[in-house]
Image (cartoon, rainbow, N blue to C red; front, side, top):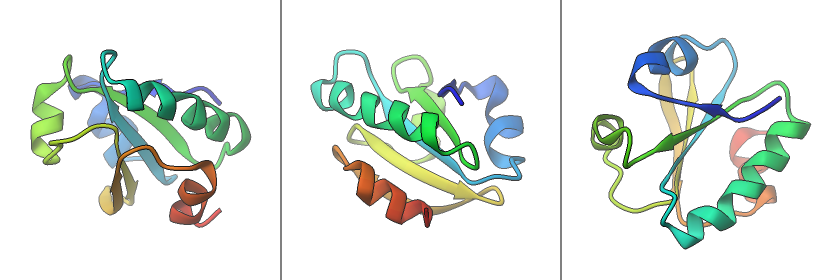
Length: 103
């Protein structure tokens, strides 16, 4: 499964109404650590079809970033049943993300 681009217009349907856990990567193109995190998210998305993986560009979606209190990037937020269940800031390993997701 590919990583989805999440925007204000598809956020409710894709994230809040998902019947699967959702991992969102809040990032920006100019952020070096975000460029390190990206391939890890891509690997996870390719191997875990039971989770929705999405990326939120904080420059293009400042309202979403503000709504979830994003002050540093990369920040990963995990949603289940429309609620935030976990959050971590900084580059996070594949194994750590899998543990957070219960995989």
